[in-house]
Length: 114
Length: 109
Image: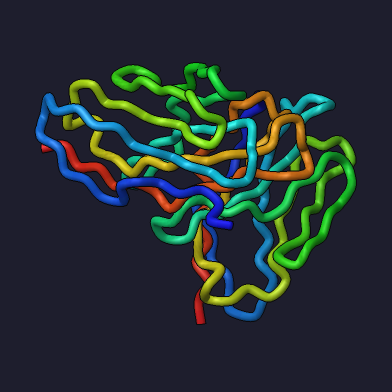
């Protein structure tokens, strides 16, 4: 049972390049989320999904797109990377409607845009 | 979702109890109080949650006031490995878990 796996763990992009971050969970969780964390700050929600084929905007969605084609995967895309998107990105998942269970987070993807 | 207020930082001596406060004065009746922590740059880790009653698990205890406007996370015997940022969150599992700034707990030898 791997939990939540994020790939890649590290990446350096040039301004204007595109990339996709992959989040995979093997816990059959319905809900999945993407957060970003900047130095000295808390986590900010980018996008989330409450089930396969659904996505919704969080606090800071601009510049990002997401897709949830399969229940176990949640993809975060940067179409044209900007230096302001340099951050650590965390994926998380949870059961739907289960208040007795928290989120499970991945170990993060450290992205630098130069 | 209700917002929370936490002190930005706290110190605790190793082996002593760490008591981390959280104010959530606008919490609604069906919102739970959750606590997470983030050690260094790792992904946040779930600690405990509660609705009305006090809760205890192998990691910590959660004390919620009767009016539910505040709560305290208690680490009974803090160790150096408990040094982390602790986040208090109120949530009804609508799919939008919003983190605040948290409290940086420094456990000192």
